[in-house]
Amino acid sequence: MRMHYCKKCGRVVLNSEDVDPHYCDYCQSVTYPVPEKYMYEGHSTIILNDQKQLLREELVMTSPEFDEYLYSHRDSDLAARRAQLEAQLAYGKAVLEGRDRGNRFGIECPYCHATNIRKISFMGRAVSAGLFGLGSNKIGKQWHCDRCGSDF
Image (tube, rainbow, N blue to C red):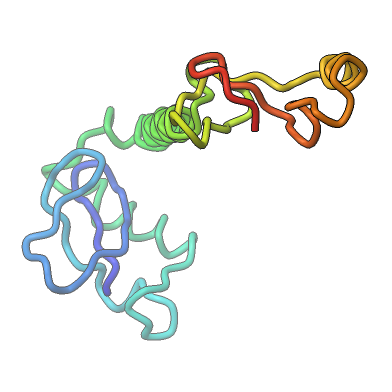
């Protein structure tokens, strides 16, 4: 692993050594290894913020590839991308748990695997137990599947 920098947008990232050439994950330009003089005490994976800023001033802003717009919008664009990915991940998790279809509990029916289930209310269990006594099928159950009608 080694730190690389982009001459176009100024992004500094950690890349593996087995990939060549390396590309910036923001602007897709080729990245270059960070020179040792900017690294923290000879480490190839640690760079301090003041050294990172110095690298950007000396190597990035003076490069003919430098793009002022990409440089100034890089952090806000990456934050927006990160937020979008987190939202997509949360939606994917909701789909897997069934909450995307209104199943706020994240539970599926163990019999038909439907996600359109609802919680059996205390009152529903009490009425069933009052009518059927110990023969009630709702005793010990807390969920009802609206697809197959089973209680679990």
